[in-house]
Length: 336
Image (cartoon, rainbow, N blue to C red):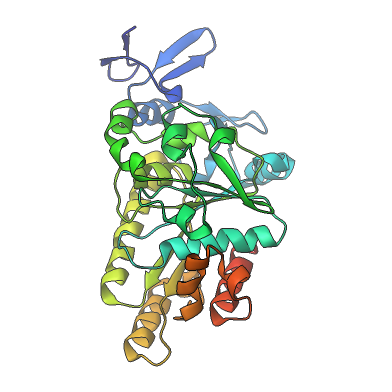
């Protein structure tokens, strides 16, 4: 049934959760996230902690957990809410993304997830790259994939594959690319991933391996995740790709009033014998300061591990690759 947008009065057919909102006895309709945000910013909201009414003016004053929205009139109210919130909601959703291919993105996603799981923390690794390299790296192939989950033709338990203790994965394949246009038609604002995972609380970490482009799938991941790690191979073109991703993050944070945190810029393929590697590392450290993580050195064992369908911690636990990725795991798990 066609309805009329409360803000712009455009007629549309609601098909997303945010497009229908109840306010007391009224039902409100919003054709887009922009109209929803315009409506919210034009009226007072009530603090979810102390009940005080106020106008939204700062990013910290609004927080989304799943598809629930909370408002905070002050930092003190937000901190109090955080302390009182059940641990089940504290899921860290980390995207591993760079718009340029060949930066060690999948290697980083696989070994970060595997390293966290080895610490005894329940972790889900989601492949959002149609190339399906995550499943290949760990030697599994899912009958049901992330495409089936996003299209609502399969539940998450049907798509999840337990691969190690405390590590589950959801695979991808070329079907994800083929169905991208269908997803765009059904969910033009790219909120489907966030909607589908909104009630998934059994994992402490969800690590997402992203496609090497800021396509619809990349935007869907940024709408879902609350943190991002950007692997940057030690070459100039990869460094430029990093700048483009940061521009996209800033746009999404401003437009949706979100706060995607850059957990770190990760230099990869660092060759200690190569002058250009040191120059790129210096540029990254100068540009991103504390956000620049310790580099991942070039290591033959890292290339060999996927051939044996293992993480670096299983294949060569004493290698430089395992040492470097273990340091990354420690930095991420203790990130403040």
